[in-house]
Length: 555
Image 1: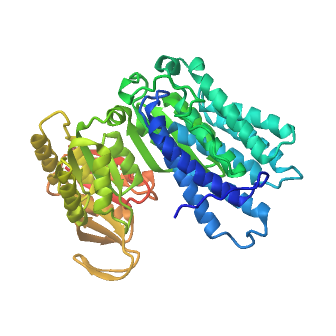
Image 2 (image 1 turned 90 degrees about the vertical axis):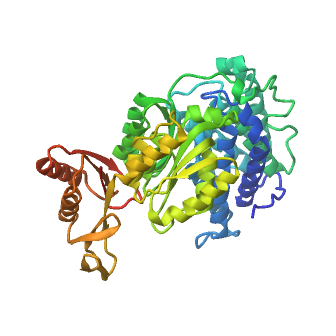
């Protein structure tokens, strides 16, 4: 249940003020969401800036509510400094883990900068002075996070807000005075953005990300003063938007084809190397966070290379890959002709299938997606025709139910009876979005059916299997869903499974390695295949978090 905002005393800067600010920011961005989307022309005219900011603020609000609902021992209303620190840090963390798009990632870093100041001891500084310093730190951190800052954007608006807030703080203004000065400074800077950035000037609009930041700052002033801002961020007369274009009227821009976003667990020195690698791959690079957890955003033509750079630096997860061409068509309300929706058991596989153009649904161990999740993915694909790859025999009923509901929406859906992720990869490899729907479905079904699948798993307890009795800790080699080999180590069990699978022939072996499996195992298995089966090729992928120790496909 959303927190009901309560009026604040003018100089009150505490956890309740942060909670109220968060709720008001979500509400303001919700009201302005469609308007901000409509004027989104930079850096990519994909009409999603308002949505990305709203979803980022929602994630921050959820994390804040959870933290305040169950504070750690020693933190209560009687310890205001500690509760304020808890609130701002939870607020910033929630934005970090839920940041969407270029604008949402920058907003997360702005909130992190605020938290760095408000989360420390006040040191004798009054609320107004403290808030002014927080806004300045926020702007500085945001500029540092962006690889190549551009003026006339959200960054410019943040800097103007900080400058105005500092002036009010230096004049011994209250926290509400500082917030109002920052809000007014941001609105004035936003109005100037069309003259600073050519893309905005040509379209006759202000910066979309800056609009969202004005809404967030207006919510901050309202939380501290109890007074509602006089103008909405986009619709308000104080912010000129002469001719807000429909998304379809926005200029189709060149540049990279994909947006890649992921969370990354990595040490700070490794992130420095990551920034350099990603900067060479594309543009719009923003890396935010710290203390071992980062949110990475970049626009590239090779999304696989961007994800691989994250693997080199640390552990990437929650990987999202978006094709801008599809996003622009969806933003214009146009349906693409055909799309593929794939259920995948691993974040690395999700990135791989996303690179191939599929809309993915992640299946975690013991948490198979339900029909509602699959239906949501079908709708997100926004296509007239959808090929659904359920990924496992246990998902067929759920996939059929989702397909039936989608057909009621007017979408033509075909479910390919895949029983393993490797069969889904085989189907995707022959997918032809330009051919006829029926021929495409037949070809994908044939490719999946022609792929034998194996899997290695570790037994959790003693049990009877089709290959005999296994003990807890034994390595189980499954072929086409049945236990065929029981071994004591991954290497020997994998070789035994491969030998059995290749006994009936094959031209291509696909290996999908789990997160804990070393690359050396794949190298040994590739050598094993090449030594005994000279005409068989081998390809290897990383399944990522949530994937099985090893998946094997033989075509």
